Image 1 (tube, rainbow, N blue to C red):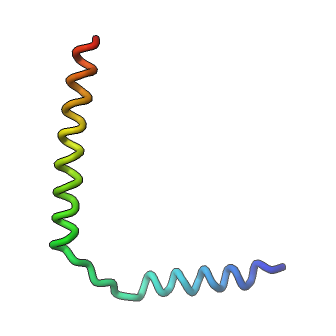
Image 2 (image 1 turned 30 degrees about the vertical axis):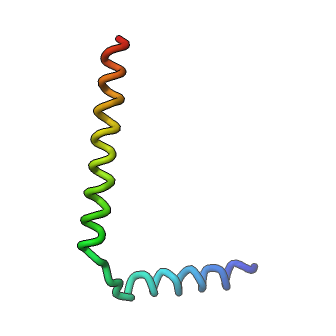
Length: 55
């Protein structure tokens, strides 16, 4: 019986997320992704070299 309030709150939150405009700092996102991609590439390269050397 208590589901009504929970559902109403979820609906309210969903509407806020859907209709509220959010400011995205694209430059910061680009820099962050470049950093993550750079680290991931060096990590993948090291791991694949070790695996191929073992086999």
